[in-house]
Image (cartoon, protein in one colour):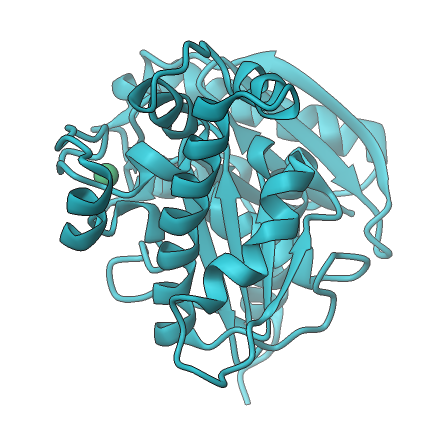
Amino acid sequence: MHYGVDIGGTKTEIALFDARWQCLDRWREPTPTDDGERFLAMLDRMTQEADRRSGERGSLGLGFPGVLNERGCLVAANLPGLRDFPLAATLEARIKRPLAIDNDSRCFIVSETGPGGAAAGDRHAFGAILGTGAGGGAIIEGRLLEGAGRFAGEWGHLPLPASARERYGLPVLACGCGLSDCLESWIAGPGLVRLHHHFGGAADTAEQWHAALIAGEDAAERAHRCHLDLLGGALANVVKLLSPQTIVMGGGLSRVDEVLAALPAALSSHLFPGVAVPHIVRSRFGDASGVRGAAMLGARQSVSETSPSP
Ligand SMILES: [Zn+2]
């Protein structure tokens, strides 16, 4: 049995998977975001309950929206109270089993290249999540790309190109990551709303922008074209660096047909002439991919730590 945990800013979900990656059970608890000990106790309790329900001692993987610093602490904007708590080491000792912890965007691409995923079996794939932010993760040569600082794939925090700023007259914005001028401010869901305002629209949500687009509103159409240009350029940067065969799109904007259908052409205009655009597909498991990928990473960790040395 394999357990995946998705740590969110308000709720934490655990899901139990069998050896064929069928989800057998799942439930949620409120996330204690302000106290490391209470957070640890919740994860311990959920794991024990999973053992009780499955009748086994399952492997465990955790996904969360941030980075793990060099001391094994979670650094995440919506989990401020856990910044100085050494979760990785304390949890492993408490639950007495090997543990995998990774960013939820990287869990996403592990899930989508795993059995039944949108890019199942692909050895070179990039996962791009466009929701409230722009997260990403890459599988290269069949392995999850981590990098020395374990933040490889953060494409949303590459800067907006100066040429694009001039073309569209966009302002410099501070980003939640601590930098300013990040692409995320324009290509994620709130960015599309921002672009709609920039071109004279009045949407409060991406859904409202989409309704205006369907209605044929000029500002919505201009925001759409600008967004596709910025998004195509951002993904082209990823393709130039990593050369994936497939890009799996996740998050709320991936469900907008007008965005997904226009992406190959938008990407192509920023790539070398004659170079094939990777397959661009919608995620198979959507929001459930985080918890599923975390479980897959946990299963691998469990195998690698229990195998005898050669
Ligand atoms: Zn940023």
